[in-house]
Length: 153
Image (tube, rainbow, N blue to C red; front, side, top):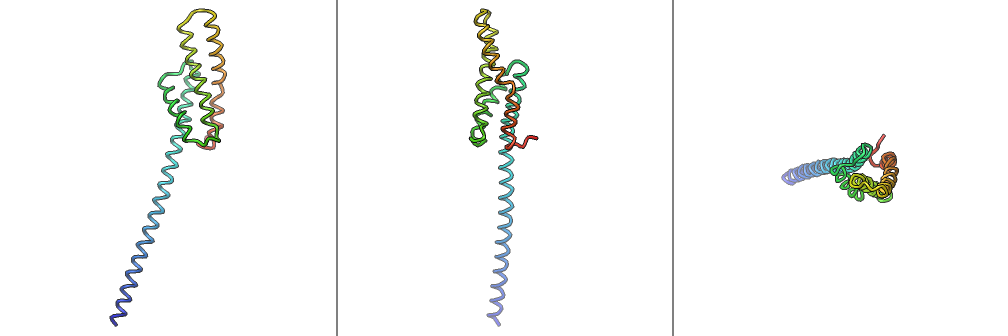
């Protein structure tokens, strides 16, 4: 009889241990799914910030001048895009071109205000016009490039 009781106790302890192990596995798998979703959300938020900062840059460009604050936010997002998007997406290269055009646009705007020499103004105006033409449709192109990564509809 005592052997039977020990066997029953061993069975009960084994079943309880198995139940605890299964419960721990379920909890761990739920935590893993939650962490994966949190990481995906953080990635989405970071990618979306790149898009929003680019939109702000475009909005200020259409108003005629890009502020230093907007430009610094854009630069930070532009550099972050190298890590946030796969290189095959072309987003970083595209934002690099936008960055160059924005620098040229702001630089020519400042240069126009600081000189009144006609030949210099004509040359500065030509650079400004070229930078403006490159910036004109960048938001459409950026939206197209980012659509798979931030699901813009």
